Length: 584
Ligand code: NOJ
Image (cartoon, rainbow, N blue to C red; front, side):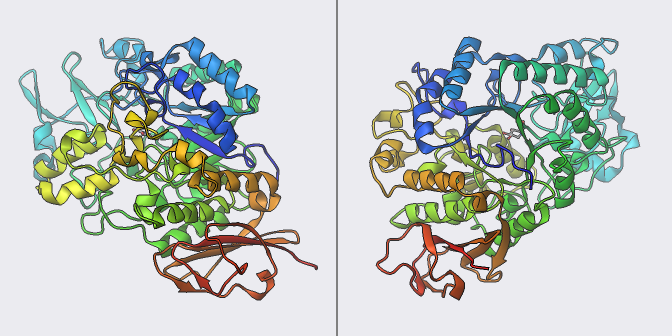
């Protein structure tokens, strides 16, 4: 297998708004990040993925960009960014930027031009369509879109199709000025760029090249699988638990997405020694082999979502749910990706990011003595697989979900919109809905990083933009740095192991005990070396007998101290890794 630095790296994701505030305005910023680079160096990570820091009106916390080449005022200046890049590089840490080009902000100069008049040269930078007259639409669809009817020049119009936005409501907004609708797969303030337009691609590629010239080390590409829309933008079936047609399914892996990425690769990516990861909503294994093909004609790796969707609601069919993540489907899914991409493409390994609730709350124990052990256990099975691991800020401390108790505590527009859509249109009661949204809200990941046990967890000297988790006195970086058996030091060890072992980076993967509901056990091999990763991902004490050949193995890491190297019994959430060298 071809070796690459990005295959041997561990990435740490920073959500700048919630990481560290240097000036007391309650919002994290670039100088805050600079002040924590030594912390990251101590953890041992190789790459930072920086969620968007560009100029933005912050409808979606920076994922709505109004200037791709300027810095958000609340985060600092371009000089601060340059210093961050320099200081990170001085410590041997690379920086990967978020690239959000499926859409821009509606406050981007391109969109402001585009909406001025139908003849504007920038009109075609976005996706504008005429509305449909009421009598052209079936009665069923009229009923479904009843709240989206607009009146224009004495005529009643419906949106161009039945697509819903990811953040609730129709995916179309009517613009009075020019009498047409524009498409937004995300919020109304995130109009989709028209990638069919060569001029759009040119602008995007040139902008990317300028960032590469500045010396950044790669891109994480936001919903890049959605950039090529299907011809004719046809209506879509309405999924269970939804009000509108599924626009994501319609656009995922669209007809020209690979052509566009190959063009991007040829014009930008292949000219620099950078890493690229595509956030690919709706990606299948077959599609991933194309996006992340080992020939290197598109991207280095993708984020797939299948494993993150396993704890969605069985009753309603949407993501909002309180069910625990089921282990058997989880390990089978991860094994499918491990084996399916082996030698053909490359995996990214993640369980947390700024869009996902905390994994300890989904799969482990949120409180009590098992919180730390379950956090370490989950980290073990993730970090011993093949692929590039991603750690999301606070994951290395075993941070957990926020105990939401009121609507006013939410900041994320996805959660806030879901409350209104599901109560108003699907008539779910607030009592039923609240625990579901509280458990899955993206805000769980966005509460401030817990640095110490002082006021606001040391995140800010002011009032944080979103509340700090009240458990910060118990869970914080300062305490964990000072304790040898903390989750922090366990992550540090996992990272060191990867840096020292080609087997962990490049070895093949073989799942064992496939149907066992509690145990996640697998083998990795490279040449004569083999590794056995044993994790009891449950609160049960389990009997387990290590296969004969591994009994004399060296223990690489473990989360339960024992007299005997390996016992026949696994404690709740116990995990260990053994390595052997075969003779022949
Ligand atoms: C995916 C990002 O991860 C998410 O945070 C954002 O809201 C959407 N894309 C829209 O940009």
